[in-house]
Amino acid sequence: MCGRYSLTTPVEAVAGLFEVAERPNLRPRYNIAPSQQAPVVRADAATGRALVLMRWGLIPSWAKEAKIGTRMINARAETVAEKPAFRSAFRHRRCLVPADGFYEWRKLGSVKQPTRITRADGAPFAFAGLWERWRAPDGAVIDSFTIITTVANELLRPIHDRMPVILDPADFGPWLEAGGVGRLVPYAGAKLAAIAVSTRVNSPRNDDPACIAPLEGDAAAI
Image (cartoon, rainbow, N blue to C red; front, side, top):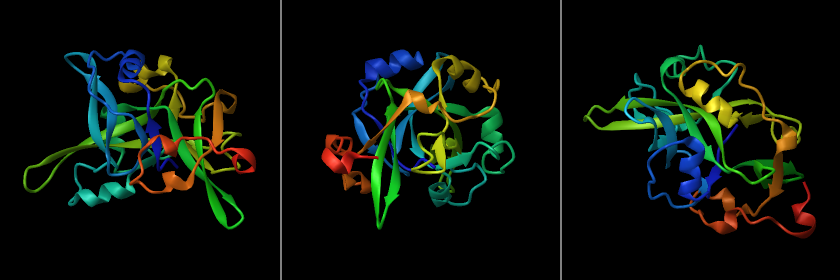
């Protein structure tokens, strides 16, 4: 699964990678958690692509309450086209979720060691995502998103059996245009790095550089 991630890359680099004209005032995020607002790139009729803020945890248009989104932070690649909560968005409302790392927790005896997974070269990337618009009974509108997951690659398998779908830049356009991208498969493990980090990331209240600082010594071994 994917329950936490980071986006600390300067906004100019994010805008360049995703080919968006906006330069929004995005602060570095070291520990993005479900229900929080986060940047998402979606197709836009006027500009081609737009970088907007959405709530993490997809709220289906037919939902009676927004809290259902807390159970919809991920969508499984194997069933996303058929599940009632996701199938309409899969056909019509795809998005890219900018990130430069995500977290998983590896069980080591009686403890769980947080591990940050990044690209080996440290570059930002995109998760394959879906978005939806929900209107509350009082008329309020919430745009929300989910991250698609697939089976873990060889690097992640000892840590967790699932991982988010990571897209290469060449796949950004086809994904947003709902033109496929082929199968939603694991990203190559050789292109990623896994780094043990502090348990500070365990709390969503913590969102600072200490969350991504690598551990040193024996504790860093994964």
